[in-house]
Image 1 (cartoon, rainbow, N blue to C red):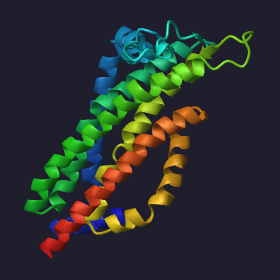
Image 2: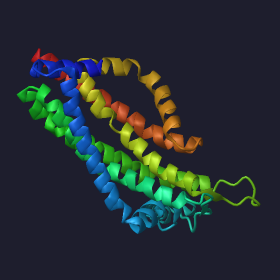
Image 3: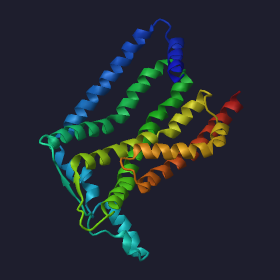
Image 4: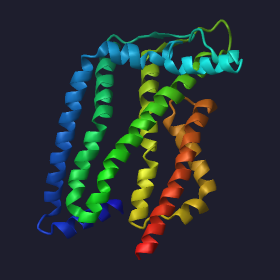
Length: 278
């Protein structure tokens, strides 16, 4: 339905272009985005120490900023359990080309995250011809909000969910005779995929705003299915979290529910504005 909406809007503004000509224009913007991603990935490749030792392996060390903040709170309120002297696990590589492969993968992921605002800008340039002057005026801010929400979600996943998850799982002991030796594949995939996943789901308010603008969604509908949304949020939290523990899934589900409530307010504001305009 959204695809048909975009194509109909494009057809209204440029009747001389066929579907394949629109596809060619889209290909141009996609190619620009790919080149930008590759360029930033190459740059990231040469900052191996910063990306791996500081960012990727940061949550593994007890002096990570999140742990320091928690420890400061613990000292303030006499909660000794919030201070961690060490994170009891070590990383191992069992694949001959494992470290080099992950170097390439992480460089690409870093390039993708840094390039996200540029990708959104290219998409907006593609959609721009289909918008009226007033729509173009109000849609410019969407580039900032979409990029900001994505980066906020990435930071939330990295600084809040990821350290708490690592600390919880690393200190979870079945028996003192079992030592935690985690493969770099398991660790790095968790550290990268969880922040990216939270970055994507943080786009929910923007999606609701767009759907409300084209009259596909109302605040009344969101309120009606609030209880159903809780089940869906728990399901999404279970899908995007790399581990199956309830603690991590709860940490992901809580901000998702907050975003849902914010989305209701956004949809209400859009619906009210449409009613006044009509």
